[in-house]
Image (tube, rainbow, N blue to C red; front, side, top):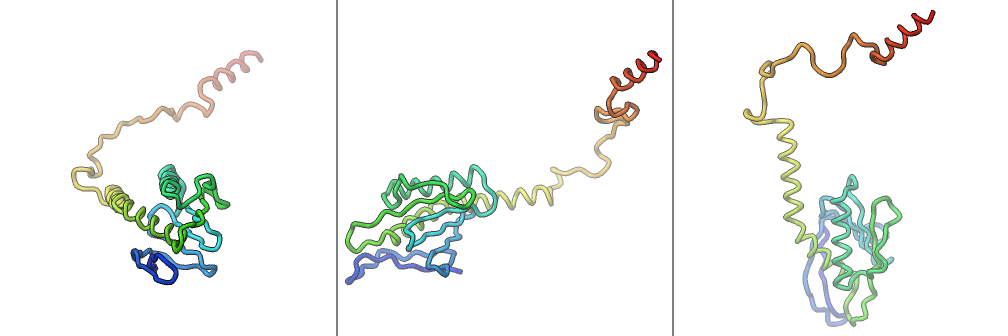
Length: 186
């Protein structure tokens, strides 16, 4: 589901700055849920005045770096309070509090959405390259080319492979010596 938002300036004489569009939805409590990024889901809450970033599937260094890049960028431009960036109440989530706008007619919620839109546009080439890489990796393993595969029987087999000898007991020769020692003591 696509969400379209018009960023405006002013309360009475609204000046349209830009229109942004996200893949996402609005939750029951009014939070905006954004699913555009392939590694993270982003929740922007107008009521709580905060932004929370959750990992999509699994946590990794790449996910954390994306969360950190976004919140650092928002703090650098003054949208998020740098001292409020912390771990969220959900495992591997990061959150930050939106600064209250002191500029007349400028909403901190809309500024956050505008900056978030720009961030996702900059991340789009990386998102696409990760998607292509995953597809190529899956094809490499599931449908290899002729030169990357072998026919059954081309690889020569040795009669004995590996380091385990099936004639030696589980505890090895040491076990056998202890049995011989016990027998000699009797």
